[in-house]
Length: 195
Image (cartoon, rainbow, N blue to C red; front, side, top):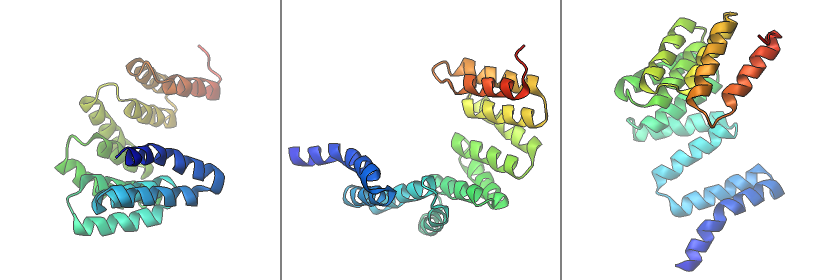
């Protein structure tokens, strides 16, 4: 038992060590081995989808997510990841369709709402994206990502005052995160406006 606990404690460190010593392919194999040995097949498939999506293997992640959803069509997490892969593939209409259905069935799944706003924004549907970001803020007041999304929309519309207001709202809501302050500094630096 102690031997297994020791192996589990070393697993993340071994994957990180392999990544730095042998490259990302070795690290992914180490994670695959860990997942295969310690997780049920569905959980292992989900972990693989996430790893593929986050490491840039978007087409593989999309194919795996599609195959998974054929077996388990109601899985909200995998549907959200499929939509994320569609965003990366610039297939915004498909992402929007997936996410709209997902939000309708899982209205409290805030990450799906965020991704829907991102899909709408990427497709150039700024008013719809703004409406979804505002819905996110109703569900999670001060949500940093929603404030950033609304700040980006305001900045694209050349409304620096509104963009700064959204960044300030994010900063007030997330006192421990420097991201909003850094984004505000970048905004002012780009505009060369330090008032």
